[in-house]
Image (cartoon, rainbow, N blue to C red; front, side, top):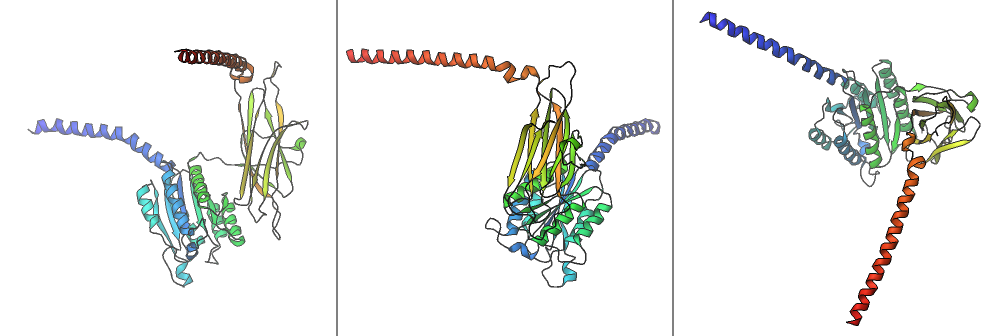
Length: 420
């Protein structure tokens, strides 16, 4: 009996080893996928001021809850999402206690939408506004993993827990070099709040947006969550020139610059025959500006002839204005392709409010993409238009003949009916 059991034990050991060998790569792959998953931590201000009813006829808290529910429904499957609150639990007057009031409402990880929505539904405006402490804790929530990390802070007021300056906290987080970006959204902003939230965002390369409507809040948070799932692209700092002749030559990529009020910036892009240039620009108001403003992006030849332009206007409801253009280049008759330098001019009509510093210039984000244009065989103007006109003419003629025949037949039937 003993001699018979030994082969059985050996076989079991062999099967276990094979199973372990088969399972090991899957486990390692799962761990690698988890480590690279993008992480987003939504940090929501639940202080007492969120009771104010000035967003689309409802309270700021109700607007935030509605936006959160829609964001949770739209969150990509591969994003690990968490929710942290500030000022949600302590209703008293003791500042020392109130400035510790930050809690993890939903842990950063795979999203259970029903559970997260249930947690958000329990929130009620309560206490202080400890933005600095909440950011420190939120950064800790995102520890681990190699994917992108993003904090989205939604607040309706400036921090009430000095001397822990939220801007210094953001700079401290950025100095750790953990690749964490903080984006901020201000609900019904005032000047002090705008300055503080802008400073927090700038310290980590994030964005600040003012929000006064529920749909704006939903759209912006959705954009930021989706951005976390996109491949990480590090913008390249560049410096545009005052004239096209001195402009830096850019290739496909994402670029950042600063443009002062009343200034224009020039950049150059080389476009070969058969290629298409796609360019877009965003200008952000990182300080108090007058309500009406616009952005103009022009593509110009080296000799100054305008090729195409894109323009957009803002009315003060958002702090970012974007526009773009496309330049399809015609095929060249030359044997060798020759690069054409296209000059891009960026101009904005933002103006600083009274008493606001005008330097440094406003942040400019420029996206350049040079791609292969459509093949000549698919050029409608060169190939398909003639056939299209013949077809259109044939259809018109057929319709005319059919109409005449039908009219004649109808009159004949009426005449026969009257005769009978």
